[in-house]
Image (cartoon, rainbow, N blue to C red; front, side):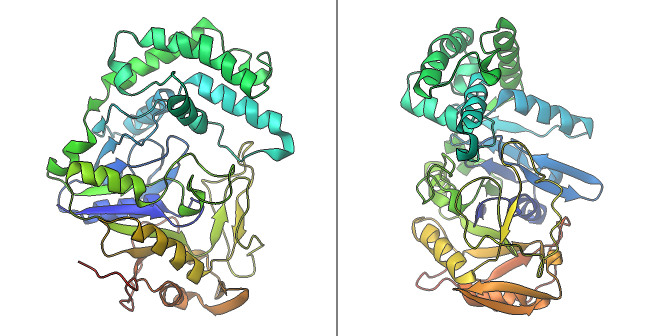
Length: 405
């Protein structure tokens, strides 16, 4: 059995979905895609032939018949899960999905508080997606109002939901200085909200097979850990509060793999040919890149919460440094590599950064420039939106100071 981990190397939106799809297609038998962090706010686009879907809960290997496992670090959103399941069913897909009972669950009240808080911040917004992910994690880790996947199977579910609505919600609103009569919270107390959510929770439980992360090692299938967001948004990194409440690198993967008894995991770090950030917060080298790249991104359109996708140039040396730091922290990690996406968006002459200086080269030489700057092999390169990798002759570089096994 082999295991890979697909990790975003920047601020997210790197193209992790197409890399997961590519790996799943290479497996001799259907793989299991393990969601190792984040929640429904992740949106991983996969296009195979006429099929196109933005995956939020289900793994991005679904078009390749891969099953999905929601690990204990995945935050589930029963309402959005149900909507996504229906969309997949409408195109004839009913993928198998399992979940560790320890995973946290987002409620409508987490979303309402999240959205009310962001609106109240005005120009000081954090750049949240407005889906309640951070509020869910905070409620679960810092208060007594935890709701988990396991709770959705219990008869006392309604009691837990009422406690979150009637006790946690007013306490949290007061802590944030929010007016409970504000637009985003106006319907929080409606019985219809609780009743609908309880129904969605039970549908989620009915469509889910409970399964511990510990059983993954004996599943007999190749595993693909699918990360969300990117290394520059890790909760332990710089830029608070404009980060995610999640470990975005190999930390969660390592914990799951150790519990499952895996011997090694091969990380594939994903980057676009340029840098992007969706949402507020500091950004490396934010600038217009129109001179070098013709960007077309149908998934990340401007929206009221994360606003407009921002751009900058990629610095391969900084990219290599943050990958190296993440790789060194993962004792089970072996043979790190890079996947580069959106190569067709590079104009004839494209640019990267080398410190404060511009490094220009032809679009065809982009992968080699990234290999030289990072000291890592580029395992595959991709166009947009195609998921079949482009032909590539790599230089065979390896991570300095870490042997491959």
